[in-house]
Length: 411
Image 1: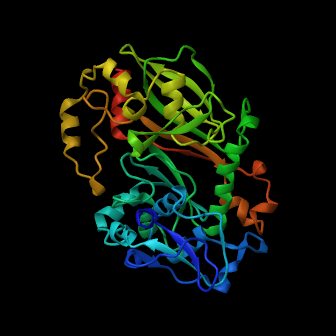
Image 2: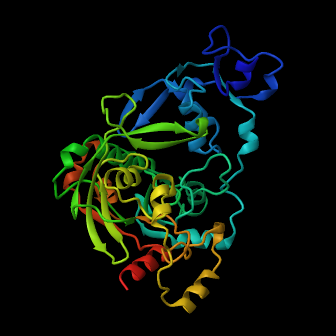
Image 3: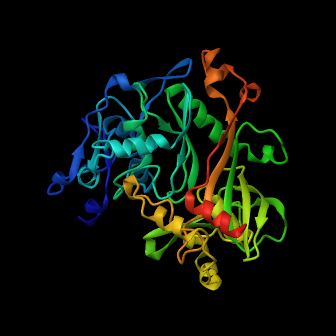
């Protein structure tokens, strides 16, 4: 009985075959039954080639439940609440917990004109293939349980600009991180961008020392202390550990890189500026795209946690103990703090001149191929050498509180 309660998602085949144990009374009212897999779903078109591919449970859930945030769907599979690798045949069914209907609220409806205008002010670049935003800190990129507004859902509702398809995420930024966020505007451009970001990580070792790379990302971070060397390369594998009796997890350095759960991670860094107060501005260039990579490399390898990163630098912040630097333009700051932004955002508070600074990590620059130009003269990305395509350079301004910290440290 306890096992029946804890199992969140089961895949069944209508008829004789089933993927897992069937739900029996009295728990039948706990489950939401999706429509059976149809025969038409077994064929898919990928760029310029036709291929008959089996439908997976993940694909079918996404297709039947477009209103569910992708993050939630992936979480169900990630927690092994369904056998994600099982393929489905015509007539197979999937059961979802009824709770997903209760916990999820539509994030794409009822946007006010002020909210739509605000989101559109975040757009720093737009062409027929991609859309680029300067993501504000504090706004989650993807939806999930207890998240009322996520950037992907809001963008889908307000940034179509006449396209029949909504813009789609091709990479992620942490909720409290800010800066350049790229979205694909069409299925083809999204597929190409996904490939670029994936290959960036898989071929990271080949990019070491190269001046020209297909994808370049540069972050600015304000850290506590200063690295021993003004520039260098961090190569340290990362792994996930469970803490708080399973209630949360964190990323840490893994010494034994042969472990199956470890992920190779590489970061280039250089010092931009140092202050007399002990802070240092770093430029961080991740050659791989691992979760919390920059935050962990700064805290655990360089020994310089990012300001405002209390997850990986809590002890360092406690020892630091001083965020009472001289104020600059106090009267102007007071007026700015009165500004109320949509979605409950406040981009002015959180500098190092305050008692509780926010995360100082910003994706400031990105260089990638001009996908729109590449797709104009070819039928598919598979026939195009992206290394020969003109580069597109994107730059995003610092959020106001980070700009204030910059002004204070360079006062």
